[in-house]
Amino acid sequence: MKNIWTITKKELKSFLYSPIAYILTSFFLLVSGFFFYNILAWANDQTMRMMQSGYGMNRININQMLFEPFFNNMTIILMFLLPMLTMRLFADEKKMRTEELLLTSPLRLSAIIIGKYLAALIIYAIILLLTATYAIFVFIYGNPELAPLLTAYLGLFLLGAVFIAIGLFASALTENQVIAAVISFSSILLIWVISWVGESGPGAWRGILTYLSFFSHFKNMVSGVIDTQDIVYYLTFIFLGLYLTRSVFEFRKWR
Image: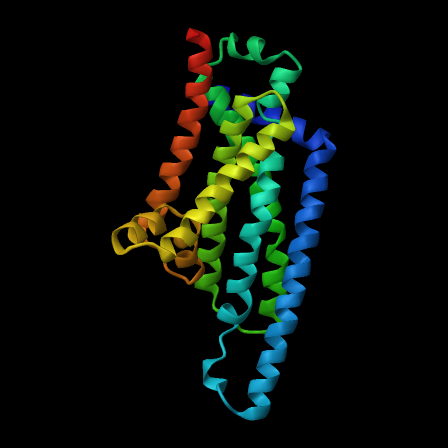
């Protein structure tokens, strides 16, 4: 654990001393704020129309009208943001020719991988926490349900954790940060597209492809449903991403 935390602190310092963390945070807050403002304006307009017509007043739900579309839009932002956050984790080590020194150090390979992963995860958690100001604003002026909001944030955190694991693996494949970001984004996009294919596929394939999609599991949590299958699904993908990252370096050792 001590070795893992040593790597984590090193990576956190690297993030904080680099402009990339601040640029990505600003980008995320700017775009997510834009989405939130527009969805809030739309939800307010729909509510006013229902009040004027007197129709559907008993069906007004702030979580469904505001937070569900907001969190769904956040997943799209993360598809672009997190590959850029993780692209330098190992690619930068290769470019600076420090990868060999790192891998031949007394630190275990697993500690290095987990340490880098946790650093990116902590940065992501901080960025995600900043968006809580939107929810606080709604709680001040409205009365949304807290439980679905918390499960939605949990789902978004787990989804981001999977994206970071994929990005870490992509960064281990190449010394070019741009290529690492492209590989990461393409992999995430491919699994996202799987859900579209699943919706139009035959019965047996539909169930399999829908289960493999990141976003079908995320939708459950945004709706306020916590299913152990969804948690296990995300944890499995996180483990797979870290395992594949380790396999890349093990392969290089024996090549």
